[in-house]
Figure 1 (cartoon, one colour):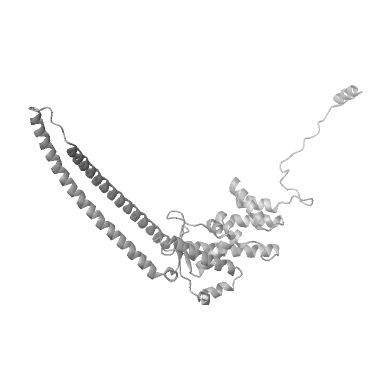
Figure 2 (cartoon, one colour):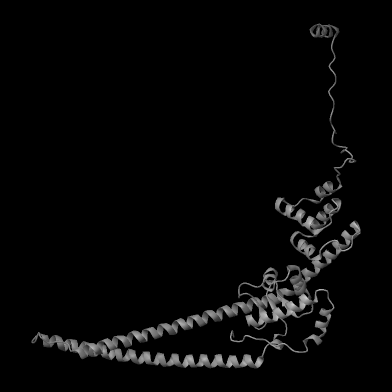
Length: 348
């Protein structure tokens, strides 16, 4: 159905309750823009509302940010809002689907294209049957011609026993050549028919495989939503913790904090926040740097991080009480009077 290159937009779409709620949001322009671009992208893909680069490669947030020329954080926020309002569905493998796609597509035009495709397939099948019937007739005629040629050859051999100057006429040569051309043509027609059937079977198999993957992604979408809600709850908890400790409102970027939680987990993110608060740098750039170093060099345990956080290296730092534990100074050497006298003589 790649012949359809347009979609429908209602003139009263801004009267919808969901659109009005989006208008009250700070990022309303970005969300509206992304919604229209997703509708257009679904029309280009033309797969019943699904949006993907091809059947094996779905669009990621980074790819949509590049295609739509918008920041990655804005794209992720808009996708979250549209998904929460059930305007789109995002499966676990990032395949996006427009909900109620029939409202944005011309059903009559789609039916007309389907009817044209059915008629085209029916005409092709009738033509294929005619070619197969003609090929069978050619095979029968070729068999009779070969039998006649054998009889003529046998008669010619009998005649050559008596006459050695019998020649084949130019007309017989042309007839033989035409028979060979007919036979080769029927063989090519059969090969083309087989190739067409194999191509149609391959397309049908790919389509069924994609439908199965989409149905499986719907079953797992509920579990993905639960994970997103869990990350959001942890994000707000750490945000409140950081605001309480630093006394600065909205000190952390929520989008970057959610990414850090999904990649490193809540315990390590909280450890990095404690270190950043101790260094008086409560920002996601400093926290992300700590987490990247841990991911590259190995994550520490909780005790080691707490020890590094509580230790101070300034001028007023107290020495570690256990630093000289177990150390015993050497006792002075005791000399006799004779040894002391010899030492004094040597010095003089």
